[in-house]
Amino acid sequence: MIEATNLTKRYGDKTAVDSISFTIRPGTVTGFLGPNGAGKSTTMRMILGLDQPTSGTVTVNGKPYAEHATPLREVGALLEAKAVHPGRSAKAHLGTMAATHHIRAKRVDEVIELTGLAAVANKRVGGFSLGMGQRLGIASALLADPDTLILDEPVNGLDPDGVQWVRTLVRDLAAEGRTVFLSSHLMSEMAQTADQLLVIGKGRIITTGPVQEVIDSVLASTVRVRSPHATDLASLLEAAGATVTSPEPGTLDVRGLTGETIGDTAYTHHLALHELATQQASLEAAYMALTQDAVEYRSETTTPEPIPAGAPR
Ligand SMILES: Nc1ncnc2c1ncn2[C@@H]1O[C@H](COP(=O)(O)OP(=O)(O)O)[C@@H](O)[C@H]1O
Ligand SMILES: [Mg+2]
Image (cartoon, rainbow, N blue to C red):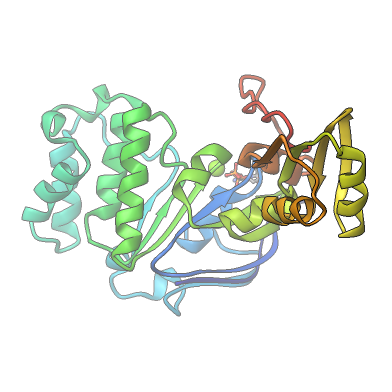
């Protein structure tokens, strides 16, 4: 369990994290989502005691991180740009870490196995790809078998296999009852990995809740309806509280009612339907809508996923 109360960090006159409060619960994967510069890494560093809050507090299992007797066993962390001695092998690096933290040597082999590093365990870390470096960072985070995992942009630099692997790994760790808190600036990634979302922009929490609720709260799904009685049906649906637009004669886009309700209404009034299709708003579209006012920096190489036809924009 991670609990933040009015957590704030200022760098000079720049407010990186602006009085945020949240609770990250065990047994779920919580995605910390926000555009670059939103304050994700700063928040994570404060959780780990690497940055002092300007004001507010944050605790892990009831205590500030630094007050735990064996913090590494409490929280495993992967931060951005982790420094590892380039001349050492992955196995030597993990071995040194294990030795200095009284972790049994056998655990080194376990995490090497778990993170798919067996083939390169004896190679110099300096020659590692970004993806291998990420795997080594995750191996370090898992070394002390902690109850809480904090992973800052863990899929950065990973190939599709690696992304899938991280996804499965964090879901398994949460299923074991651990607290898993991971950040990303990629909505599509979070949609497939997280149970809960904490969306942040410009240092403030924009919204939080189960992934699907977050999407639904921003972009209600639209139901595409085609009927030879579109005009009559539109009146009935509007009377039932829906917002109805007609992109072309005979076709309606209905918001605010489910496909079931629309179908039942048509049936009750003996109006034929030729199409009834719920168009799910994409998570990417929801994210864009959520953060459009909070983007400080948008990479020119990042193209958002296309919004599916029919999704409100
Ligand atoms: N050490 C620092 N000194 C000054 N500004 C910083 C420092 N670290 C982060 N910032 C600023 O704080 C804001 C949040 O940064 P960060 O937490 O790294 O965001 P994110 O991880 O979401 O991309 C950014 O505007 C960044 O430039
Ligand atoms: Mg960051």
